[in-house]
Image 1 (cartoon, rainbow, N blue to C red):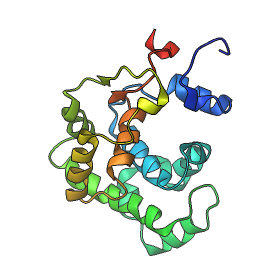
Image 2: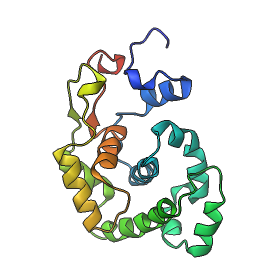
Image 3: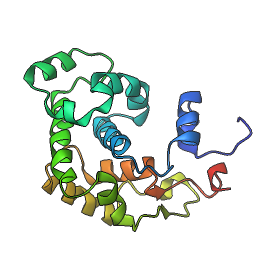
Image 4: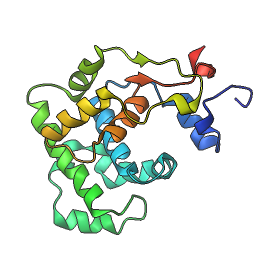
Length: 185
């Protein structure tokens, strides 16, 4: 694997390389996985993705294997308990956002799946960009602003345009692998 040309952001260590090689940019259509990524990206706000990546398993355990119905029923005692959990980011607003997002998800689910809702923005196909350098990749786009605005109207939290663009990259709605990356071969 060391002979592969990768996007420069992931060269820190094997955890990051594995994430780049196996997860980032791979299209995800499963609602539970999309929900998990949406909340993990929200947890990243003000932090590095690497910090969240190291805590991904802690989040899975803390939020009941991403059981959305169970998360939606969490209350203040759960928030206080989770604030003491060193395996996640112990920010009250971010913890409460996961619960709020579970409730918003269940409302959305009454009319459509999260997958259908999100992928409709890109006509069911990843947007494939042709970036040659990391500095060409935007932090947000008009589309991420539009999705962010709509998610907020639906009651979701920690879904700003930058978070949404990172989410779109992570779940493969956008392919921002550099043109020199082996993932483009």
